[in-house]
Image 1 (cartoon, one colour):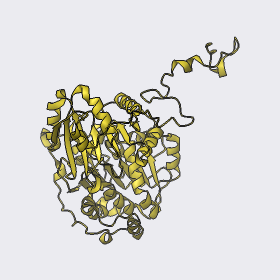
Image 2: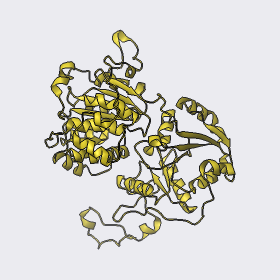
Image 3: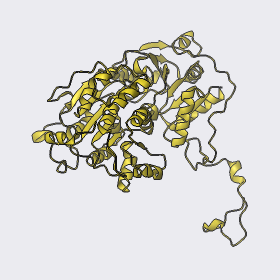
Image 4: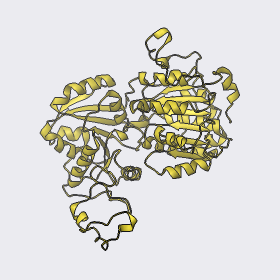
Length: 488
C-alpha cells in the first residue's frame, strides 16, 4: 500500500525550509518551555485493533506474521498500528520489550511496499541510538521486508563505511541507522534523504541523553517535509520535547504503560553487601545455573570483572564500546547460544539487546539515573515473561540507590546478605564457582591484537615486542616507510 504524500501535504506546512536552524525551545513571548507536549493532540486516535487481520496491511505481511507465530498484537501494536497505517504522526510509549519494533515497523513497511528506491535515495528511515539496537531492529523486520520485497540496509559505526555506501548505492528502500554514521554517509554524498516518506525515531530519549540531538535534527531537516514521523520510546520526557514540537504534526499519542515504564512482571531486589564481600557475592551469582547480564560502570570494570570470573571458572564475556563491532556481535552470539553464561556489560547493552528466557539482571554497579535502571532491567521480563533485577548496594551507596528507586517508581525487596547466605542463593540461584579457569572468546583469525580495554593497537606484551623481526640491512628502509626498523 503506497504512501499518499498528497493527502499528507494538505494538512502540513508547505515547507520546513523556513524552520529555524536550531530547535525551538521557548513558547510565545519568551514563555518557559512547554511541559509534556506529548500528552496533547488535536485529533483523537483510531480505535485499537483486536487482531492483525482487521488492519489494512498487504497480504504478504499478514502471512508472514502467521509464519513467525505472531498471532495477537501486543497492546502498543494494537493501539498504534491503526493510526500509523493511516499515515498519522505517532508518539508511542511502551515498556521495553513490549513490541514497539513491530508497532512502527509494520506500518513503515506497509506504507513503503510497492515502491523502489533509487541508488542512495532511501524511502524509509529508522534512527536508533546504538549499534546493537540497529541490528536488533533490522533482524526483527527482515522477514517482513522480504515478504514485500523491500531492501533494508543497516548503517552503523564500527563496520566498513565502504560496504554500507555500496549497500545504499545498490538501492535500499529502508535504512536503519545510528545518527553519527548516517550523517557521515550523507556528508560524503553516498546518501540523500529527500525521498524519505516515513521516519521513525526509536528510543529518542536515549539519543537525547547521548548527545545526538544536533545530528538527529540535522537529519530530520533533510527528509520530506510532507512525510510521516513516528517517535517511540520506553520513556517520553522533557528531553524529547524539542523534537516533538519541531518535527511532529498533530501527533496521536499512544501510551500503554506508566511514564516510569516499570514492568509488573519483574521483581526488584536490593541486596545490601559489604565492600569486602561484594566480589565473592558477584562470583557466586555469576556461577548460577542459567544466563545473567551483569552491568558495571566502565569498560575497564567490565574487562576486570570478566577476567576474574573466567579465572573462577565462569564462562563470562565482556561487552562495551571499546570493542570492535565484530567482537561485540560475536560476544552477543555466544551469550545467546549459551556458550557464554554471563555477559558483563556497560550501558551500551542497556538498550537494544533481546535474549530469550533471560530471567536475571544484576547491577554490580548501580546505574546513574532511573531511566538507566529501567532500561538495564528491561533486558529481562520481556513480552510478558517474568524476571528479576538485583542491585548490589554497599553502605556508601544506600541513599543514592534509594533515591534512584523512587525516581524509577520501583519498590524493591531489601535484603542484607553475605556471599555464603542461603538467602542469596534463593533470590539469585547463587552457588560456588568451580574454580577451574576457563578460556572464552579468543580473537578471531587476522584480528589485530587488543589490550585490556579492547582497543586496536594496544600495547603488546614485552615478550612480543622483543621478538620483532630483525632490522633491514644498513641504509635500507623497511617497506619504504621512511626509516629502518630498530634491532631487537
